Image 1: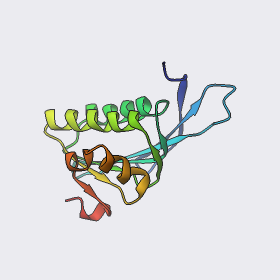
Image 2: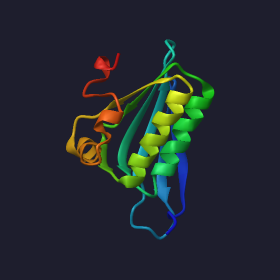
Image 3: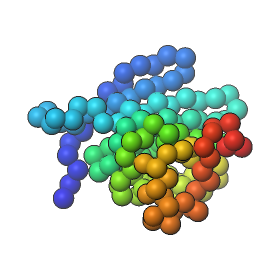
Image 4: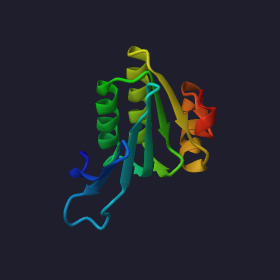
Length: 141
């Protein structure tokens, strides 16, 4: 089974923050299932804030945004998953790929998560120990 077609819409670009929203193809009752905002700091920190559902449709788009940010270069990446309402197996697979890429590129990766929609899938799959996860972004480093 393949993922339904989806496309990104760049909704806003101000103060160094890019906000992108993924929407399903025409005819779908779901219009906006994932929003990703990226911000680059002067200290080599890139923050990616994810809001919505990370599933078969949206995980590839999230991976694409993270890859773009890693290609632009950074020393540290913070992925804020607190606004995520659903993290499916495709989302977990995407997080693993991000962690591998960061490790290969010697980039420090931290996840911010504080609710069951993200923490529970990480715990159930045994992936909680594979990531450095904090509940507050100020505690990441």
